[in-house]
Length: 235
Image 1 (cartoon, rainbow, N blue to C red):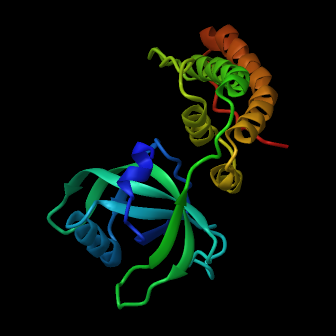
Image 2 (cartoon, one colour; image 1 turned 90 degrees about the horizontal axis):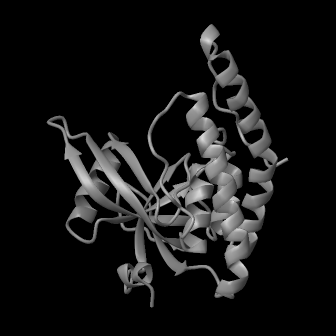
């Protein structure tokens, strides 16, 4: 049993927080809690395990903020909390493990509570995962370096070359500027190799544009020309 699975062992009911963002396992996400129902949720989980389910919903579809049965989300663990006098809170969460909604539980809570099951990626040959993971890490690092140049940043980039393939795929998917619907598809995949394959394709399309923009930015710096981030598309 993995450490992530161990954290949710015996936990079959999960409070849900629908938001227009996609959370991945192992990825941090800061949130501002201000609605009364989610203030109550924060109090309730604080007395238990500090776990809730973040569920992505499309903000353009305001008629369906209740994720349907079968929806896949990510369990979030509250790791830090800053509470204000008026009851609002800033919290830092960390993605733990993916869940699937089986059904909803009606017991009068002001927020959604679902019966859920949990899953992780299927087992795959680590030797076969190593080459695509290496390429994804290298290409993503090239893009990150180009973005740093465009934004005139001096921070040292973290070394992700030895990151475990599944974790790498989640970190890169979370960091990429792609549509939330595409991120949701990445979250739902149970194959690390397929996620790496899709990421590699998107990164290979984007890297040339980023590096060309960085080159032009360096040439134009003396004229005060700047650059902005270039969005990645999976088309």
